[in-house]
Length: 557
Image (cartoon, rainbow, N blue to C red; front, side, top):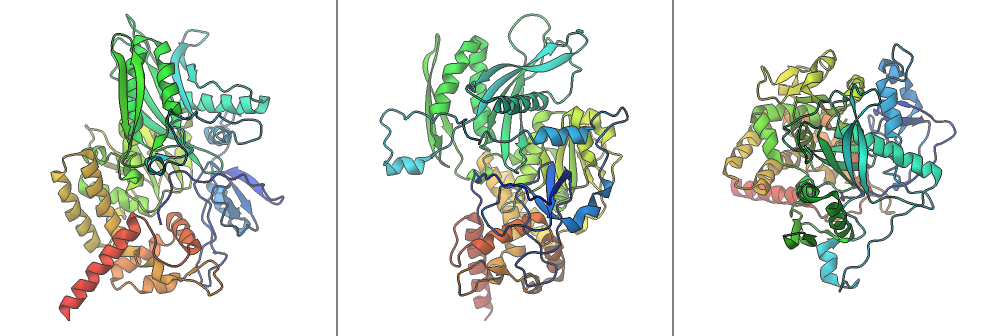
């Protein structure tokens, strides 16, 4: 079952008997339509920093992007939640974080819509070749902002402020404008997560990184950021260019930021026409290219080609950074912790390293999706998020390490070049989570990456090594989803599913994996599908593996 790049977003009213609080546990004990003990209720799509508990839930399968609902019998699990206020009585970081995240809603209310992109010359709606080349109805981006460091009123420090925004959103109601301002304020926080302790610089190597904005309904927007030293003489603070988009494609947006930087060096006025052309351009389908014509003084008209990788589910990932920072065995330990949805903190000083590593680790879980908190770069002001009791993937700069290591039951991974040890803290059982035989097979498959000559080839070798792991452990899931003759949703027979596994170590791992939210959401979507052949890379690999096993069995007989 393959995920689309854009999830449907729906607004849902909260029931009158519900209540909200921060960092609620997402563990739930019974599924509504399971006839087996130990099943799970539907768990909502992606983790945000607020959740809602309720005593009942709707059975509609169309509420995948609605707010997280949890049953009332779990209320005692929140006892370990840290206080919402600090010693001075001000709202604590967790409370500030929850409030900030709740502002990341789409402007879906009546009276405010982006205008539709104008048709390109010669564009024909019925052109079937265009339908294959482009993804309809998607902009490349929502915003481009320039974030500059400005001195505070007392002149003692710097504060990030937006000094340029495209496009400007006009005609908004007051409440919409307030929401907009909150979102833009949050963007400045992620562009300069180090806080206010900056000083003018004469040299500063530009760096590109990304972050994720998680909305209250679980939907995510990606921020692509490039920080550099602006033109001029003498010491000056860096500035950041940030693109906000619902699309996850780091390589493509890195190239766009390079073009923005090139134009900024000439004049800020050169950015607008390029971004306008980009906003009007159709977003290409996987494996296809869109060309943007842009005029630059003294250079004339340039044609910028933007190509999406054929493997679109890997277009936000570069596994090279992951294996530059960690050995193959260390990657497997991180994967083991992630696949059981544990709390993991990555430590590095470079923002680009943190963002690339976290997205790479999340991609190792394909075809499953990390459903909990994921912050590739935690701003200093929000460092208390490490106290959350729920699973997370966090990126933390090394100078904040002392604020992280006083936590228990988490994996802290040092990605630095000069590290003394890779795992600063761990639960201790990470090396025993994966079945030994399958772990050896992953390591053997990973050795083939040495022959990869391009990023795409490397990504394919790495992803297939871990994809095959899931094929061998849970690839028989479809045989245990039973459908009634009436054509309703299927029912997953969990006990029969894991008992069908011959290997004792594999069966032990699968029993643990079945308790994760990522598997639960995956199997719920399978239950809603009609019986029969399914499309997608995972299903293709399952069929290939099953065919291979049949041939091996036939040879033995």
